[in-house]
Length: 154
Image (cartoon, rainbow, N blue to C red; front, side, top):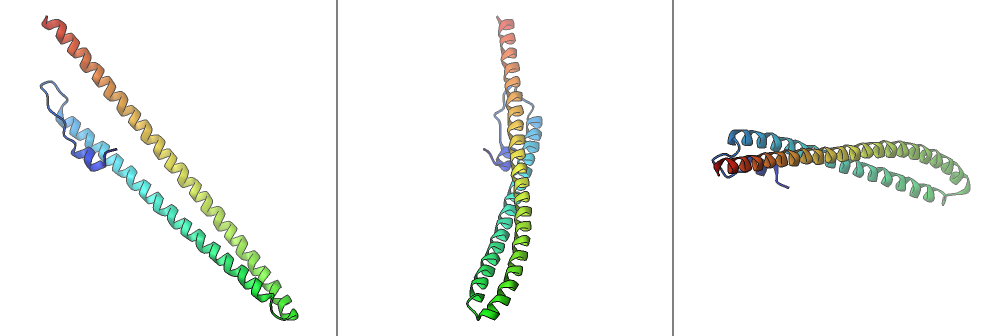
């Protein structure tokens, strides 16, 4: 697919009874800007998703560190171990609850982003379909015009 710049800079050959160059240029500018906006939004959503994935990894690292701390605490004396084990379990539960909340939030955001990306793709396909339909109608009109001119010239 052409880039927004390639769309706006595209040159058409000129013909005696061709399209109005100003209208074509104007339309290509609009199309190029829309494609550029969609591309920017896609890149923004992609960066946001990557950021959220990195944040999720940080929480998983914290959870792993807490688990290792719990294992090390169990090696201490029986009395200290029991007290530390209870404390670590409370900390772990709180951390897991918070991590679950964060994971749920991140998963919801990722699902929203996926829906938005899917929606953008559907809109892009719809736009291309409409553009194709317009081009086909214009070609049909041109063929009709050529047939009509051909009959008149004979």
